[in-house]
Image (cartoon, rainbow, N blue to C red; front, top):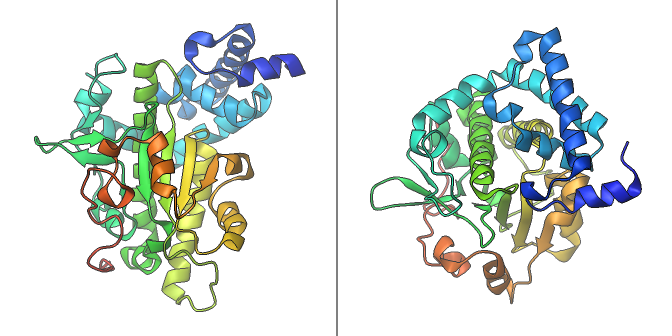
Amino acid sequence: RPSAAELAELAELTTFADCGPAHAAAIAYMRWRRDEAVAADASLAPSAEMAADLRLHRFLISTKWDAAAAADAYVTALGWRRDKKMDALRDRIVRSNPSFFVGGACGGDAPAVLDVLYVGEHDAATQQVQPRTFTREGSDGRHNLLLDRLGNLVVIECPGLVDNAGIFALGTAKWTESFLAGTELTVLMLDELSRRQGRLALTCKILDMQGMKLLKAFMSKEEKEGERAFKDAGSQVSAAYPTTTFKMLLLNLPGASMAGPIIKSMAPARSAKKFEILSSKTALTQIQTYVEPANLPHKLGGELPDGVQWGTGGKKSPRR
């Protein structure tokens, strides 16, 4: 187990080039545990990305470089991926975006562009009930990733406007499948950005909390079932895809007293320090310290169209 001094050294890692002997030892242990698990059960064999050192880094950082705990979580995640058939989903995503994942340039300045956003039958319907923005459409119809000033992936969401009844109407199993596809795509994008940049790329999330409520007394049965599916899927991906968040910038909170409960409901305790609650008077300025206007919608003081992110046109629950 690393000493206090070694843990401090491990925590200061900013680029892969900064890795020292302690980092190398932790990674070597993770590889050994991976190989041991696969030797005992070949069905746990990981995808290329899941086997890569940078994915092992994510598990190690999430446990503060406790290699044994990280390896336990990693092997559990391999079993989860097998049971959920995540590698088949991974293959569809990569095949649909060969210029980014397969033929992408190595340099950090190379274009970060996806050919296809949706690879599953229900992905477009899922975007309708739970919209999120992480790309801007180019003149060629492809999708340019939104990046912050450090090169992290920008993701814009409105948790208070998620149509929980729409999740139920779509069917929680169908919605969960698409939600997991969206998460797999996100982390694959982070892996590729990490490879290009030589550092661990993360997400910079901007969360507009307009409409967020904690009182559940007046929710319909359909809304409660949809919310339950949302929380269950969220807990699964938190364990299987650790260390993916750089910042969570919250604006339009309904009240200061709700900040603590909202944050607790949205993220594990280890991620609470990544939240920043933005003042209504300075929110746009604060956001733009992280993200250039060229990668932000008009509503956030940027240059891009707002689209449907804020529920324009009203909610329409899809049919089963």
